[in-house]
Amino acid sequence: MSNEPIVIAHRGANKFAPENSIPAIDVAGKMGYWGVELDVCSSSDGVLYLLHDPTLNRTTNGRGLITKKSSDEIDELKIDKGANIAQYPNLKVPRFEEALTECSKYNLVPIFEIKFLSKRNRDINTFLDIIHEYGYEKKVIVHSFNYPALEYLKSKDNEIRIMPIINPNSRLHGYMYAKSIGAVALDSRYDLLTKKIVQLAHKDGLKVFCWTIDRRQDFKRAAKMGVDYIYSDTIYPSKQEVKLRKNSV
Image (cartoon, rainbow, N blue to C red; front, side, top):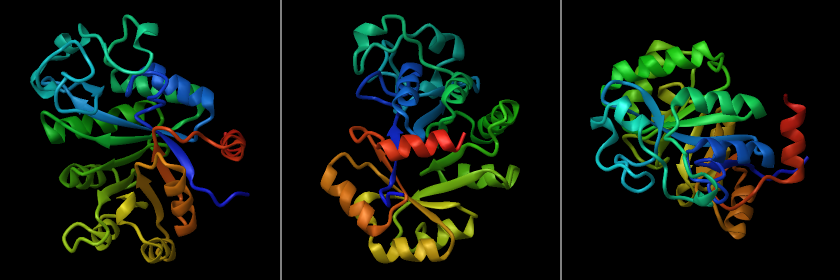
């Protein structure tokens, strides 16, 4: 078995289809990825959608903050930018439930980043209700810079797998913080990690995720450090990884 990190499709297979879209998840599944990293935001009325930015401007024909738009308004929008957009002329901003349905077709592990919420506790409760309804409570991994959201999530369901996105060297929100809130893994920017930190995490029973690696030399360095998972836009799953995913179904 290779010691290379497992590759996660960052915002889906975003070099083949628009980021955070259903086609990006579909392509990632067909390519054999183990998992997809996707971003979750909420509308003003508490409906959850996939979107990376606080505003709709960059990837859709809409304008303004997603948290200030109603679900009716968002449902009328189209994703109009991204890879191979001409192949997807009527692409909608996907709801959270649609992402889970698409992941289930390929047994993809979804890693959801909690991004921008109009009402934190209400929207986290909705998030939990949906993943339980879809049977994903033991499959999903949740990461975020929004530490209060992760802490609230964990307080409502201690079985949910979480990992704060951290600087492992930070005294306030670093390695010890991740351990203190019951994280299953470290999730850090690639250049903040060292082999010593990775070894410490493994000693404490934590996996190590890092972002975002798009160069082969960085991938090799991550492998030498012992990193378990990487997020990437341009590195695709190896044959061994595809085999691993198929065998884990």
